[in-house]
Image (cartoon, rainbow, N blue to C red; front, side, top):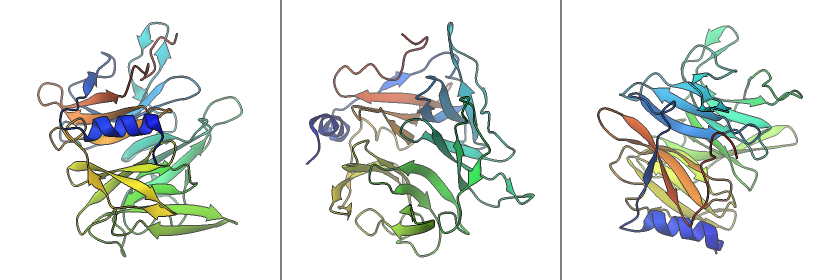
Length: 281
């Protein structure tokens, strides 16, 4: 059974009259496509993806929270040549996951792989590390998100799935990685891209095709998925969801059309003060 707060938000997301509101600080919102937000638990700064209006050319940018509000975005401190996207902070903020085509062994990757970077003792970022096989594969990987159950959830078009692209999960034990497909309850013969566990681990949001679905925890696995309502499935362009730490709010990107292209949207249950304000109070 879902905790009350998580159930309230998922009820709003499933409701036929649910609504989302735009979150568009001037320094962050632009005519380009902004998506995949990640708020730094240590600093309150915002990492996000900016791409062109066709959702191509992904780059991770950083907007610092200053005394004057959100600053003009710059490249992330760990940026490298190539496509980079899907930043996400592990609980506590000591580690960040992302995807990249950056070079390994002097040669740029042909597809997107999962990378991670750890916080240094001084609060900066160390050297990014590519996760090993079998987490990464001969195919592409997307949207790495660590669940409360200790599994790292992600999307991939690797061989051996239920369809074109699937949701997978990986876990490390005694120095070895195990990878599992989430199976037919979550995956179909079509495309599943982005898995987002609720902070309490009781439900899983899945971006599949052009819509969002939710799957409930069922023992050690996941039950059949259910399509959510227009609060998040507004026009088929939604992507890059992020729960607030409490699980009571959800941010995601939606193509708002000209002149803005991709905009960040928020759905809340109750009066939670999230996303974080800037300057910080």
